[in-house]
Image (cartoon, chains in turn yellow, orange):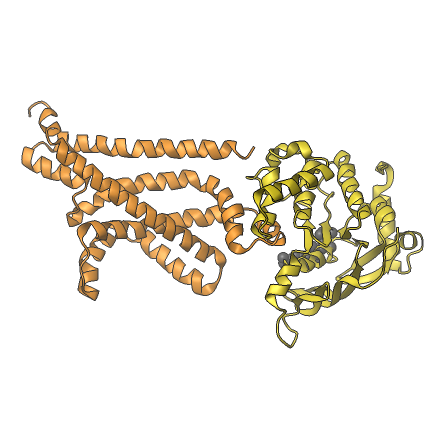
Length: 267
Length: 221
Ligand SMILES: Nc1ncnc2c1ncn2[C@@H]1O[C@H](COP(=O)(O)OP(=O)(O)OP(=O)(O)O)[C@@H](O)[C@H]1O
Ligand SMILES: [Mg+2]
């Protein structure tokens, strides 16, 4: 799959993120074009989640800038000059949707209310409009019959699909996925990946942290390999999987395939 | 010692009803004050912002660790002496008990809020909900379920605690009982009836909180 390389939707520019003395992101730069699917891989602790969390505005950064649609949404606290315009940054934050590894639907609300809460409170949408939107999104993720149910009654895979619908209800321009299938029973992984594939086919810009190499191979336009807080290599999936340029990438992929080994799932 | 004689005491029922009404009003005012202030204190503590956290911490520890009786007397006699003006017996007791109970509610609520998983805040944040909406629609409804049992216990404790207002002459239930027993020389019968009245006041509260707990337990599954 190829996507227009025009002007990038998201620009991550020399971002430095530290926790105390530990540098977790070390001058990371990455552009994501509109409609692109970028898969981020790398060993545990390499900073993949942190990168997504910075992009979602959950973490302040120390240096560099993050732009969405050419508007600065996040700027290093150690950078000179005024901070980004809060109102504009806030508005563009809503363009970024995120789904986490842990199913963090709101447990006290029905699936319907989970989905309509943010459109109603943040976008000021009316109840009927928000519910119509939710019904449409639930159909898209195959949960149209679960609207009145509380999350505890859903399987892990259904919860993740509901969480995807909830994020989509804010009509984001880019979706971030942080290992959304890692906590699922193996037989439930497929349905969530299918939903993500469909989303990609519909042209959603996506940044996906995953260990599902099948997904990366089929869906990603580019794969980014991160190690120790830095981007080591970025290449289309066929290239990075068959002839990685960096020794560290190769070592990581070999370990990963070895681990998948016997019980590789076919999707 | 003669037999216990309740008939004579029952004759004072209009006074007892007056006392019960004062006790109810006293409880309602201090519980309302305590809930609102307690929530504000809990949020101030939870925020971790030093200039909110530290005053809240000092307030809570002061009111938790000193006797409520002293707080009532201090407010009634001490405050006018210090800053002038005058607080009547009802409002002194209501405010003192409200401040006292706020400290206990604050600790209950803080634990309730802290018990909500961090990822719930993050999920609300990435959806673009502001702090007020996050608390109102996401955090507090979930915390409510966890804080109901200790909150119920604290409310019941407060209703009985209003009896301390007797010390400054607030005409609540125990005070009325004391006056009746002085007139009739029947303290055992009078106080037994007073105790029954407290039970009649507090047991429905216990039942109400149990019903609330059941309701919230069902609605999430
Ligand atoms: N809130 C935090 N406070 C302090 N250090 C943190 C925090 N979050 C992450 N880190 C550290 O930052 C580094 C990168 O963590 P991150 O979660 O981004 O890695 P990751 O690539 O997502 O790993 P995994 O594959 O295990 O999810 C780790 O060393 C981690 O210990
Ligand atoms: Mg991670």
